[in-house]
Length: 394
Image 1: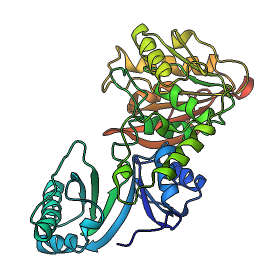
Image 2 (image 1 turned 60 degrees about the vertical axis):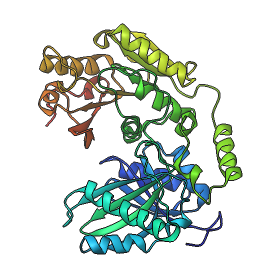
Image 3 (image 1 turned 90 degrees about the vertical axis):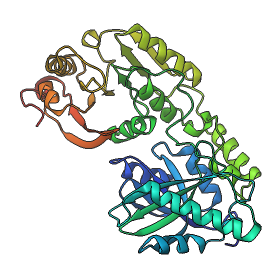
Image 4 (image 1 turned 90 degrees about the horizontal axis):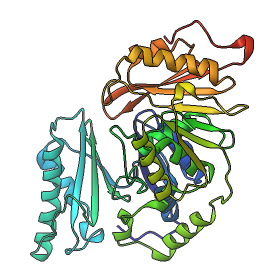
């Protein structure tokens, strides 16, 4: 595989969570990627090396940024082994580099992703051994080169993983509560809310502060990748350009808005959660942009005007509530009475309990929190006579 010039385009696959594909597609368009197409938990596009670096730094809803190297059909084990060996792996890694293979298999005659990963590893190792008499080592935890194998209907896509550590691990979280929200999911929910990054943003059950931090990063135009402690996968690639990445990093730093752009407020009843949120906010250097206070949501009132309230109340999955139905009824009453003029978004995995909110949903977006089937429910809280009342969430 010939080394590409830094400005030459190649295919890129960005992976995400189910339900966030269109949000990620827009992020990639904003980076001037070409041929952007949303798929199932992934978005394909075309870009150059600079854009690959930028995607890792800027994409709030991407989990991994992959660079496909080959695609082929694998009928059986022998065929898979032979096809993997058609790539000259010495062009992508050296003998002294460690590697790992992440395999995802679906709708295939191959049943186990671990077996497919093992077979792929053998093909790579055997190629090196045949050429040099030696073999590179596997390191599943911190490999120099991470290879992604995706098999669907026996169609295999082999990619280099440019991200390394998953991009949802931003690096700002020192403390989490019992059920922390994945940062990618939090950013995706905020994007789906249509918040304008200028009007008030409120999380009245803020836990360890993930929604608040992701909202502040958006409002202040801070690239989430700037908090990263671990090196990116692409930093070990043979075509890695340190000057180019330095330029991308410095450009990102320069784009940060230094004056507060929006009122971002969090409440929580639990003093420990407030402490955790404050520590995470400080670790992210966002203490000038976010206000957090210990308060009972049911006694709070929204700031004047129009804004967005986003919350992730307990579902009785990981965090137990004494009376989940009453909790959701009280959420609905408080939103209706104290948050008029706002758009409210309730993210929940308990669809039965959500019926007790007692307000009409204007939107229902299917999402997952881990393996939990969830909905992002939108309530438009009108003032005066158009107050949403009466009709329960379907």
